[in-house]
Length: 596
Image 1 (cartoon, rainbow, N blue to C red):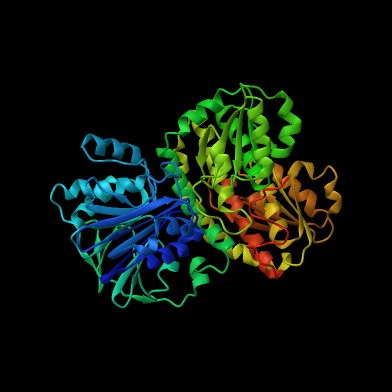
Image 2: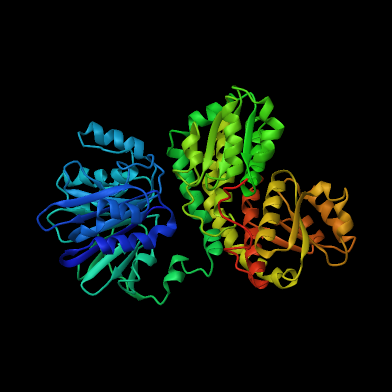
């Protein structure tokens, strides 16, 4: 997602190079625009920003000429407001006395903007980062000092975010954490604050980790932590970190795949906050509900998400939605498409050639085109009539993990809205995902030794878990190079059961409603000597009939399939390492497939 970095130094000096390098070290998070601001001793602020990559924008806008005692850089991944120069960060307040930038989502951004405009403030963008600045401005104008203004602004800003802000005529910067990451660095003659470690380590290895509900005041020679609740000073020990730059970029994890698996609770929380505040959800749902035929179009992992989305829509909205692989969409449905049809096209990158080919055919037939995409500014986003962002940030590991989960959550959210149901049931999901990760690590480790040398296995599911079985099989194939076939559990007896022999592994993904049917498949396997591994909530039938049960938290039929994704991801990761492979970059594969 977005990344912020701010620095305070002892005397006015060139800061442009420092800010550009910090921005580059945050660029692995993903972004569509970049901006820098420096504050001068004469009370002026130099603000430069635009859409594009750090190097290109820095050269065009001459970031290297920027000087000051205080400075900040922000890399923006668009959520509120399209990628544009005016929506790029940092932002001014009404009079240009404050400048600030944020990371995260302020979900009541639209309502706040209306308030600020009604109060006579100068609102220049539709970006929620600007709302952070105006929220502070509102209380500064009422006579509060900066800490007091930030404390009160925090209560007005809903969502998960962190921001950095500076004021003319001062010698310090301020930062606030509420949900998004924030780390402080204490250097020699300088202090800095950032979304994460990589941009701090070149300056210092002495850090303070900021907690939610805390404000940081940064001077060149010291920092101060204060509580939002009462403004009181917080005492905290400074840490000395030993991580290398590579480890820091991976958040302390040995591989990006594992880091991205563990990011899933956070990105799901951000997506739900974003959708609850989005003005685009309702018209998108309305368009889908009115379709003569509704198609869900994707490839690979995205297609598996479409399959699960189809089941959710039928179950929750009584709406038939046809999941279809993008290349087959052209042959199977292309000639029959019409102006009353709707295609929802799904792609992590937004550049998948097969998906764009299918989309082009749909447009030629007058079919309405909607998008579900992670990379904003991509072709899919630009050509869709309406789109929703997946809000995952940059996914570096080639195997999709967090993007699949957010695609599925997006489909579940849309299905609930289409069926006129309460989306509040999703509020439990981030916590359940965290609980699942804690539960499954030791369970996956226990299976690793016996599965590591297996070159052939099956992964089976039924109903809501059938797409999860397909996705789990894909993950195992991608990173272990073993052949794992995903299949509907009831189809296994129609031929593939012949592959089962003594000790042959078969994974069964069981939804809580489908346990009796899954147990039937388990017994068909075990009575022929096969090794049955079940994934599901605690259940006596699963426990007594399968050889092993990877237990999930109790979540109910709608959420349990999403949780079941995680053990398959973790197991794939562990087996990849056990077999001596790099899970981040499996052979023969690319993150973005731009060829037919």
